[in-house]
Image 1 (tube, rainbow, N blue to C red):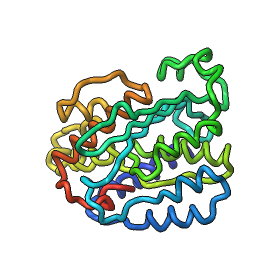
Image 2: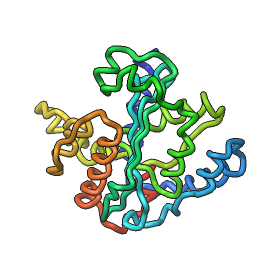
Image 3: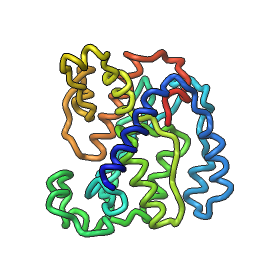
Amino acid sequence: MQQWRQRLQKHIRRWQWHRRSRLVSEWPAYLADRQSNTRDDRLARYFGAGTMDAQTPISEVPLVALDIETTGLDPARDSIVSIGVQPFTLGRIRVADSRYWTVKPRRALSGRSVVYHRLTHSDLAEAPSFDEIIGEVLEQLAGRLVVVHYTRIEREFLDAAARHYLKESLLFPLIDTMAIEAYQHRRLPWFQRLIGRRPVSLRLHPSRERYNLPPYQAHHALVDALATAELLQAQIARHYEPDTPVGVLWE
């Protein structure tokens, strides 16, 4: 079953990579519908802020990089332990406006997860629950287009946490810098695959190296949010025009 799920996710991701030339325009209507039907005031305020029209040039879009650290990779069993957000535009990163939260996980930490994100039991003992900070997080995201590196983590974990604590789903448009890298660098011609050329790594920090961006400490939610913001700026500058419709980039 696990292998079947992984294969399905791989095929879905390939479809997302190869639909880069299509305009996706459903998000404004979806957010408006959710604002009318949600029962939670925090979600209603977020959805009520809406999003930009799909034809809006990416250069005119207010952006916010989002990164979360978790106890594992399965949103059904694992939990969020920290969240970082970094507001920015293609021309400027407002570091002073960044925000960072630690979050008490629903289950005990494992030794492996502590090594990975370096947050210990004592670090999280007094941390608020997801339900206590989600209103603040949504205030930072409202009216901005969220940018992540690997949609599956941020989208699926936030949705799972919202369903657990708020009893409602939490979905919104995202730009995925990993998907952009995949589209640009994993379309190997058949002859290059034949001679054994290996696809490049799509992880955040190897991706940044391809744009000569400096190395940062990995697996800290706020640092990774900043790293993701810088990566998108570099990707747009190299691969896209400033008037590229945002509906071509979000998913």
